[in-house]
Amino acid sequence: MRSYKLIAPAKINLSLEIIGDRPDGYHELVMILQSIDLADEIEIHSISDETIRVHCNHPQVPTDKSNLVYRAAELMATKFPQALAKYGGVDITLNKHIPVAAGLAGGSTNAAAVLVGIDLLWNLGLTQTEIEELGSILGSDIPFCVAGGTVIATGRGEQLSPLPTLDHIYIVLGKYRSLEVSTAWAYKTYRQEYGSTYLRDTNDLASRAAAVHSAPVVKAILAKDAVAIAKTMHNDLEKVVLPSYPQVLQLKEVFASQPGVIGTMMSGSGPSVFALCASQSQAEQIQQQVRQIIPNEDLELFVTRTITHGIQVAGK
Ligand code: C5P
Image (cartoon, rainbow, N blue to C red; front, top):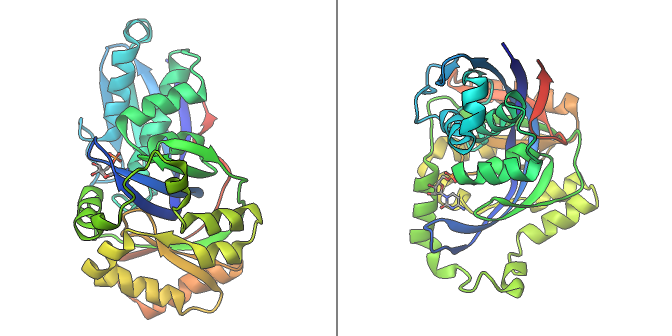
């Protein structure tokens, strides 16, 4: 039996700008995506029958076809039927630490790990670009999750341009366990309320460059200036999610009021909110302070940090 262990990190958005709609129903985006060390562990091994089995330690996570991980394995089986016949099916165990439905790409990073794991299990020898292309069939965030680091993502979010990596910026991240935001709902509501502001010709480079909110963030990243990054971060989806989820807005305000927080923002379509902090010890203090201000058991708080990689193989 062959098996691999993989580490699948979450992401946060240092920016998320919606610049247009697309004929495929998705939205044209400019995002700056950042990997963080909050990660799930994925074990994958070959089984003799040609089936896909998924197990998970988290009761909220489905193990059937509705799980992106299942669909990632199914896609590999469809694309590489000879490898399936030679090596057999796959048994996948997800050990979740990343909050689910949180705007942290938890499902996408698990699927990215499965693509990487099956490539190894079946000796396919795919390039990272080939794995990213397979990922983009399943979800817009999966190519980034394969690559990781600090990246500008455009198109649906699947076209990646790497930026210099940002290591060791400390973050406190909060998510209410019982709150979930539908990504499709967030984009649909944004389109209804702000669609009239979209750029009409998103193929035009000048129009793309007008995605002004992300430009100062890129400049700050190039200068490795964490304070400037924190001050220029931007997420268009806050405009629709925060008014509908007052607890998320309150969490953001509590983070912002803490000494040592250099900037705070919602990640992706939420509802997780993160605060960039001046140091690890300050992040730990802020976590304790926020726990006292909001003594709600439903609120999960994590201290994490920026990292420079995506999916990693942790062992056989
Ligand atoms: O690509 P993914 O399946 O992760 O996206 C989830 C949902 O988010 C889509 O069904 C779509 O409603 C919305 N979305 C969008 N534009 C994007 C990415 C996602 O409208 N660029």
